[in-house]
Image (cartoon, rainbow, N blue to C red; front, side, top):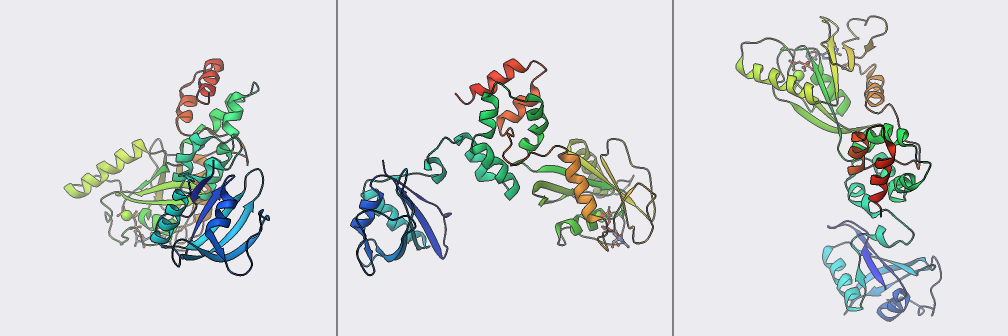
Length: 344
Ligand SMILES: Nc1nc2c(ncn2[C@@H]2O[C@H](COP(=O)(O)OP(=O)(O)OP(=O)(O)O)[C@@H](O)[C@H]2O)c(=O)[nH]1
Ligand SMILES: [Mg+2]
């Protein structure tokens, strides 16, 4: 079967790329492609690149490249990137009896774990996509099929796997004026939240999604925690408490100029305004104004969220397997059987 796929995303771009692969790929190109200069050879030469036209009438000026000759001949067609040009070429390939593959990864040959593909398509960072690509190439599937599966290691990596698409939920809390909004802005790199010297500025939860060392994080700025008679601010404080309870990680921001003890259940405490007042020894000190200590704060957030990081190529549970590993008790036999079952 000869198949084709559009490799570039839908929409308008300067160039679009289609790939045609299979026994009819080369005969088809020889039949329909009109090369500039000498005719195409009877059999394809690996890495040969030719300019010409393709399509009925004048057709589109395209570049044809032979990217693979074995096990299957694969030819890439680089055309102009308008959706109508792409549609015209797709119709031509349909008419030639090629089958359209929605995802090119599926027909590259070899044994791949297609179950990973929806997660791969939704991966928000390059690092997460790279971990998912390892699973696509079978790292997790092969691990659970192996008699020597290290279930403990898979369990340790399950939280990483559970946040390859869904970002970690990190909430910044602290007293009014501690500098929570200033810190969120400094980390985000732009003025996401309103900052003023007035205590009680932030009311609603303000979210920003970002990557810290490739780890996807949703940072939420909240209203400063205090007793207040202002109903609007009180609602903000109520929301902040709720977000604190449901967050994956709470960062408590201490105002260095007016320090108070942090509440229970806080994973990371950070002393802000270190440019004005030095932090006591052993305390993570930052300044949203000078950005000193910001790198350490971000590293601390990632290290707390993901104390165990996968090695390149390592098996990491993804999608439903993260929860399965999380629920499993000590009895490893049924869980391995259940996991492996998913791949049969
Ligand atoms: N010198 C100095 N000033 C800072 C620092 N961080 C924040 N500020 C100032 O402190 C004031 C309060 O900052 P915000 O970021 O609005 O504080 P907040 O915690 O979000 O305050 P609420 O939204 O009211 O809870 C502003 O005047 C900031 O410019 C810092 O690291 N150093
Ligand atoms: Mg604020």
